[in-house]
Length: 157
Image 1 (tube, rainbow, N blue to C red):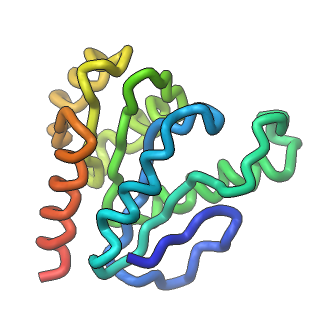
Image 2 (image 1 turned 30 degrees about the vertical axis):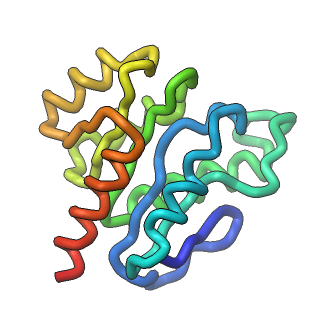
């Protein structure tokens, strides 16, 4: 899959299918799971929107008036709206507040597949939302990758 990260502009018509990697980043403190995910899908057709910015600076003020911060959030919102599928991973030992926000924003979209290990501190909340909106929920990183591959395979037939 072709990978696009911010601040690279989103292409007008990306290679289909498109996948957004939503999940734990925690201001760059969470494990770098996105790199493993991209590597595991390298042989698939399509485009991955990976929000994990290479030159992220945790000292940026997270306010609307800060241009790099605003650019990041706008990029993510646009990519989430444009993608065909959202793989959402709640890493153990992370708090993932933005991912929880994105879960709420896209719970009804039909685009989500969630990976949430038992160690995630708010797993109960994630389970209730997934059940209510019939979102596929798996309990490990590897199972999330497998579920995404199955869904991508169906989309490319």
